[in-house]
Amino acid sequence: KDAEDVMGRGFYWSKLLSALTDSVTKGVWLTRLSTESEKDTRVLLIEGSAVGRGEESAFIGRFMKELKKNPVFTELFDEIELGHLSQKKLKDVDVYDFVVRCTFKKGRV
Image (tube, rainbow, N blue to C red; front, side, top):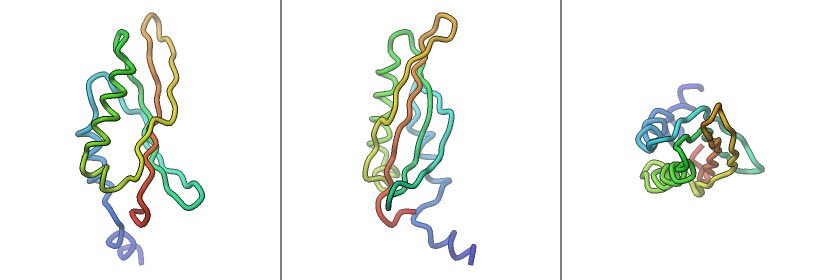
């Protein structure tokens, strides 16, 4: 049964992780990946941080743009949106923590 479940999946995590790696841009560091269920949908949460002497929001914007144009992500997800953004200071450096919410298309997980 387990082998059937794996073979019958709508995607492979290795392909998704490779596409994610290809989409990471300068100034962005990923810190956590997780999934959650909301009603009848499944969401991939991508957590990360951006550091860049005043360019942090631009770095996050470029990362989001790369995700949205990546063919693996457009195949798997209906929506890719910024779910949370917060700012903190580490010593004298501004750090922006963010969460990207990717809503799986029906039948993909």
